[in-house]
Length: 293
Image (cartoon, one colour):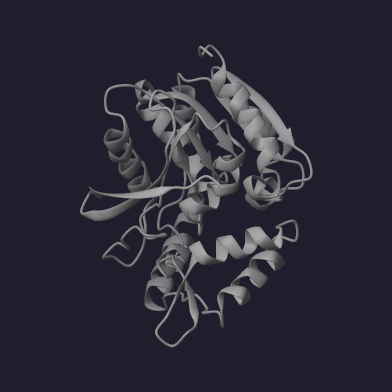
């Protein structure tokens, strides 16, 4: 297992944690985790990647070892602003390779269209964009948001790290026990009474107050200058959950100027847990193109 170290940065008033697996400083890669996840979740993928990659992975605000916000809900574009400043700390003078899973892929796709000069290559793992919404849905969304602010969600504690690992395997039957135990130690923390709670702010479960606008997302995707590797998982239910049919799915991929599309077999949404070796092979081949050695 490749060993990582931790650095902390002041990012927009938050103490931001960035995990680092050292490698060749000329081959930097940034990994962005998904919703209700943490940076350590990429350990299995990093172990399978070319060891020359110098890998960085932040914990988003409100996750892992990064501070929670002093507010009652989270806003999508704050992740984009955080990413802009995190990349500045990692490599301010040259574009970086960026890999995002799920939420991380959606954030990275918007960022790559906002600051195309800052992204060298972009790998999107199951980050397909949001649902297509209609303006008439807006009032109900705001009503829901106000209701959730009055009755904020909570995250259930677990009796032990082993119990949390049990839950992870229940959610993903493909997850090996050794990996589940590792993840539990990073996703959870022990409380004074001996129980285990997740390292995630429950406020992440509060719905966004504003609807996502598909037409706006497409405009960001069209501005992405970097080559894109788009990877999905054969057994993922993400498309159905978002409500994306095959025609819509193809149109989303077509929005990018330069895109390569791959599917990982025998994997679900957490494909970097299910098939890290297969995912790493695709990433290595994509990122190593045109590099010496």
